[in-house]
Length: 417
Image 1: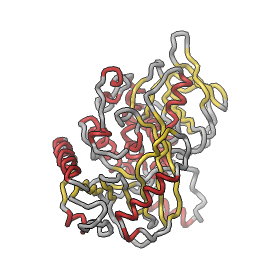
Image 2: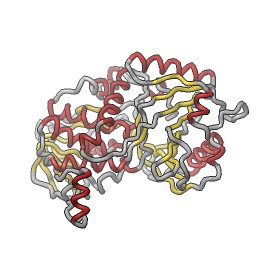
Image 3: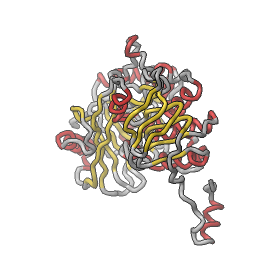
Image 4: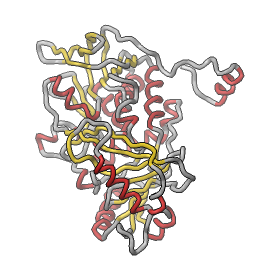
């Protein structure tokens, strides 16, 4: 792999930019792999990369039924943060944030991580009580958050209606300075390129249709649209379609899939240099490098695999944004889309070996999958390679649904979805 650098860019410029190679090979499937990762999104590619880099396991294939990054990894709002409540969640997302901070150097690929900061506004006295509890929990574990006043929010987010007559009055809030956004396709392409350079086969247009098990019940091959591929281990990393592949493998997951809509406006001049989120509505907004306002809100309220979402939720989110940010009301909407998120009962992920020996799973991230990509890959790779869960990943096992040791971030972090 040719390293990207200012010097290589200069050299290629002298040669008419004809020396660049594809970022990754168009690999054909081999008959057998040590490990197969099903799903060519951020988490799947990160798992393959860390298997190769951290554990020396390079006879690995990533199988993607469509194209790399064509699922949720390319259909999100790119926010990265670690402001959670429970210690287990904080450790998980702090690992992800720490890895994101050096990811461009690690992958030799600019993922455009912008640590512009996150401001969360409270809209009632009850919100401020929640914020005080959250700040205390996060500070105990070293997360960089600080409470801020209404005046500080006005200065940081002048477009937000903080007037006494606002429909959603602002009582105060808190800020995480290390939070921010990254370019979603750059994260995916960076992991794909780095994994390929270490010998991982990335196989697109290869849909998994079933699993073959040995007499003892252990997974020994996957059936695909491009034929049977044998393996010692396999992992399902397909976000909203996790329950579909789990059923094909012969077990059920406590997962329900919903559509989560997102929107982007036409480009405008710089008006918002932080990520802003309000507790009363769950609506969040940031401004992209191209100038568009990227925003979203709550889930569609029924299970679905539709990648557009329904009109009532879309209208509600757009209307709420215009209500809270009056100056945005006349900006034209450029496009709208939806990702399929996999939600479990406690709104926390599942990183574990499944009831089928040798078959692993990374799912249940709900609305938080993109921000967790490096950690999800790091932790699943550790468990696949060693056969044991990482200390940070251990609380997110399937066993918690039997023991009742749930990590209820839906209530703990005050998220709207």
